[in-house]
Image (cartoon, rainbow, N blue to C red):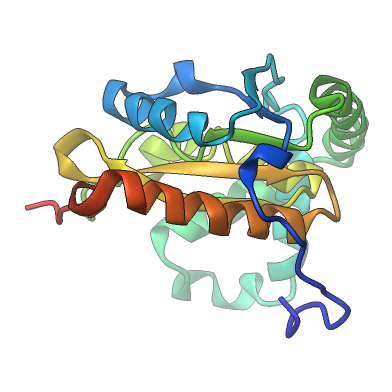
Length: 215
């Protein structure tokens, strides 16, 4: 982090007892992924369930315009050099209208206010990183993309720091993942909490925390 943000200073956090934490979105997980998160959450003694809003995708046009702008100078002459997956996504991004982007900007601002209100006095949020275990390497990513980014895209949209940690084996013996999220600018707190949680998860799960490789 110091290489990315030179003024960065680690947070002084000696125990997860110090943090008021909200737990959200477990109902969107496959059964064993949810079970692993339910085992990880109590490592935060002051954790409580919170109704945290989903992004809903109303602002996705903003992200799509940003992606289009990055590739706008290169794509027209080199479209055939892009893989089918990326080329399909970019073609959708180039089709986004100015009106859709403007509506997305308004939706993003409204979503930010809702999230701040939902977090309230809580310092961190605990959610799934993804609701299922890693898929086979030959899966068509476009078919799972919406569900795969459901729990991570909201914080990309908000600009809030988020950290993913393995938290034990789930379906097919593959790793479940817990996501720790803080408000904008609270990167040091997220990293400090993640470090403490990782040591606790390893200590309680032992060898069973090691994921298997899908056959």
